[in-house]
Length: 441
Image (cartoon, rainbow, N blue to C red; front, side):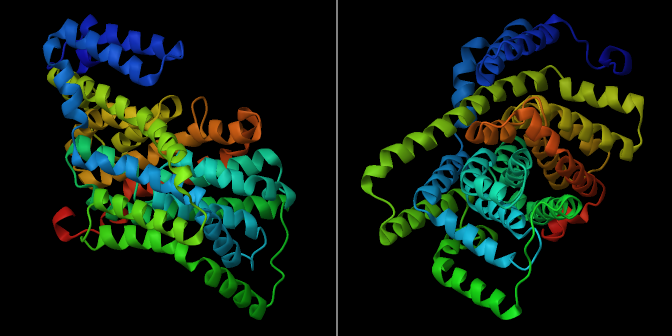
């Protein structure tokens, strides 16, 4: 394609060979970081874009960033939150808030996913933690097990969409944009996704009558809510510190993550739900999750550098704009590419590889770079509940034993409503820029 529509890039086996190798390795279930690493080294070797002697230095330079320190800190905070039982306090408050509505516990499940997202920044962690707390109760409330799993998987998508988010830290690092700025911009879009999932569950519940409830007097409602807040208000200290610290400018995301870890640990000790003996397991669990993310970033950055040196982003822009120069169509093409990529590959490699390729196209049509980042992460977030590699589908399937295909089928309505929000973010810049200072608009 690029040979036809662009005179700046001539592609050969130095590009196609590594791409074929990557596809083969992924098809053979080779870990994604290894597939990216092998493809990157082969591309660097064939193209001469970067001397192989500098690959090791490039790997370490890529992850030697202060902003990335926030990633393991937020992961650890989420793990401590679960082990101290504070996550159940979120569920109690969410359930009290939604007790007036028919389908209230389903809505409470979605809300607690959003609350957990405001601390951990991870989809998989939210799906596992909330799934263990709610799926059995959702089934008892009348929901079919596959739908209950789909509801948790969809709600957990907010893990990378509601700040603080690991995905925004990574895309900020790749594109040189402040993570704090992206967190601020993502607040409204993230809440819109949460609302879309809530609305979807309400509509589905109305159609099929899965869960009753809602027959409660105003006095009982406020009485129950008051008891839930009185017994669990301290759990909200953690997200309060994160949000106030970051959005007020007093704390960087890394500092907010470190503070959240300390406060959560202290609360665990004060409540007596955390012991020193729990620390090895917590640290090992968090290290395993972090150990999946950082190698992908480390190997993806040299690959992104090679692509940039070879002129692939510019060639991509030339190819796509050669087909059409209509901004609305180009935006739709970008969304389709991101959703397709999100279906077959995890968010981190998609960000590191696709962000430098697609951003020049966004710049070419005058899209605000902040809006582009929000659109990209939100579109990729849909991939968490779409086969064949929807991570949240695998997580909830793993903890329940339910078939992934059955869960995916029940997730279709959530995908539909989330895509509507993605289109709104893409075509209405104000959704991403309203919260920002004028300099970013």
